[in-house]
Length: 410
Image (cartoon, rainbow, N blue to C red; front, side, top):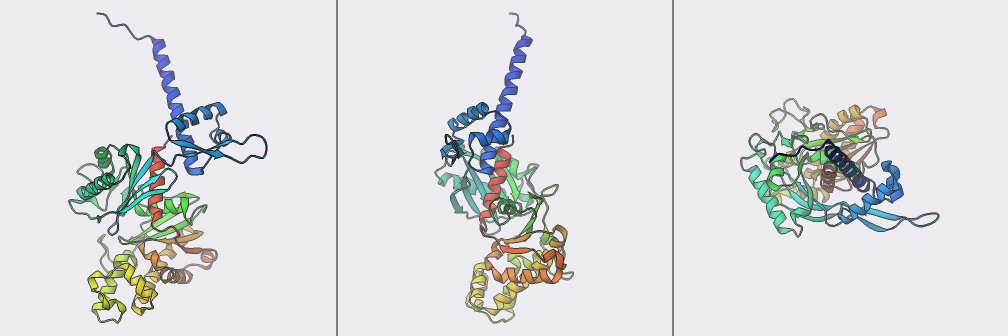
């Protein structure tokens, strides 16, 4: 039986339909981007911002409401005439899964499209570079999703923030190499395994995105945020109003500048890195060395192996001289390192985050003193130094923003 040839006019119709669908999809994503990043909007505002017609925007909004991406939340104020309807991202039906991997204190969270943390849970998981790292992370994600009342089909995307040299373009972690399956990236493997788009980002990069969108760096054109955490020291950078990640996502590895030629061996293989003097791990190491050398401290009342950062900060707040001195030393060395970054980037502000930020003035005061000592006067005259007001939430929300940017690419 002969096969009827396809009429060229049919092909033209299909092509036109395809172009129309693509244009419609792009406009929908632009509407969602606008509502997510700018907040509640009216039809008139969206029409102006998207440079399209009122009927087109109205139709697309109706479809997005039906698809449960957005909701009507009431009427906007108007000087004259009828009050317009306000539209917002739907706080239900669509969610993002966040895994914040760390050497100590990993977390999982479910966040809605209005940036509200619906569920947050500590994971019994410590990031490592052992052969079973991928297996443990995967098992922890499965267990978390099995325990939460939100089905996987309502998750539009997932993200993992973690320390190390993470290339966000390909999902590889070049520091924790064993977490990447053979010949495949961590991110692509998780995407296939869960049938869900996974995006991998360095924890400090996630932190600065969070600070830039929701924290003290919001609205700033040039700012730095230092992540003083267990794994080391990371530097988040905002340049000309945008987060700077570098060509491979590696920008901001401040912890690996050499500050002490004959210092301690760093996990990177070099000697005297800033990490070896200013990370949370280095603080605990120095506490143990001091106590073993007979230094007097309230910390001697606790088994040396059970001493953690929270306890050191607690006794410092109680006036313990050893704890105060060690925190001061860390802040001083951190300030020296940051003075290099200040001269390079000339920021408006430095925001201190990470677990050591919980020490407050015990850390920020010596940082400020060192910057005053080592920076040129004109660089520091208007420079502000703050402890983050959103803390570890910056990483969760920053990862959320990163996922939304990728999922809603127009």
